[in-house]
Image 1: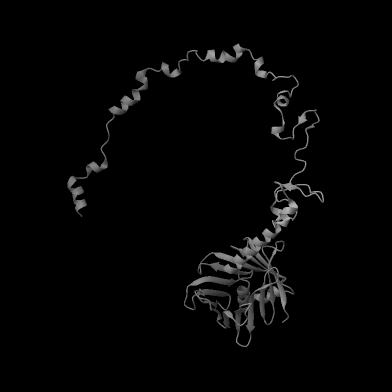
Image 2 (image 1 turned 180 degrees about the vertical axis):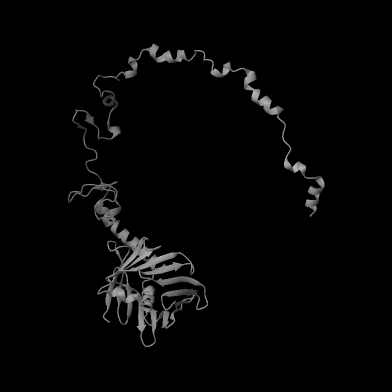
Length: 352
């Protein structure tokens, strides 16, 4: 079999590529987006065994997968990891996944249906965790969360109708193994994405990362706190860590379309006379409140002494107000049902 390149997308085909798989007669190479080998699986057709090897030291076996007519046995050589068994049921229409060997508890059930392959979680009667939908043309396998109409988790695209090969239970178990995302794979993917974001967000050399500034004229490096930029470069400081000097920050005052002055100078350079004489009258302008007569200003305070009007509740006689309270005191309470139980019967129940 010639090696086939399989592409995996992190969602639909419009999403970024998450991994590549190089599948052939010798085995499977799982590669990242830079096509660096992250996992390596080798086939041994004579013994029906597939082994996972260390990509850096291919003689080191990490896991071994033994296929027989009953399913597949996964053996791990890492400390703390238990083996798993994948056993066929109902003539290969279903696969039970047991944790810890042939006698372990059933953790997952894989069922082959006409529309795709479902994978239940938490036992035989658990909820559907994932669904593997095969494209009718055999071009791709779509992995959805929670059911046939769930969110698309991944899309794996094949060439030359290669997806139909994995409809067979034996081949699907191989597909399930080498397309699995372990916790280590997830953490490495997050680390790679963080490093990529940091590279994309790195500041451009020669420009300030804090504000837009005009480039300094050639041959005239700007001064920053009394130290020239070329001197800072000679000292080995990073140029991108400097805040550039904005040459036109202290431009003279300008006027807008209405002829009013727009002050762009620092406040310490504006004299008191210039501030006070802004309106051209030589003094402070009278505010609009000066045009309000004193009588109108303080008229509301004189109205505050007017007597308050009597409310409607004052017209209700006191006897009518407290009549309901008197009637409630005259009522007698009814005897409860517990009063009919003899004292001996009550006491005898407590003794028992």
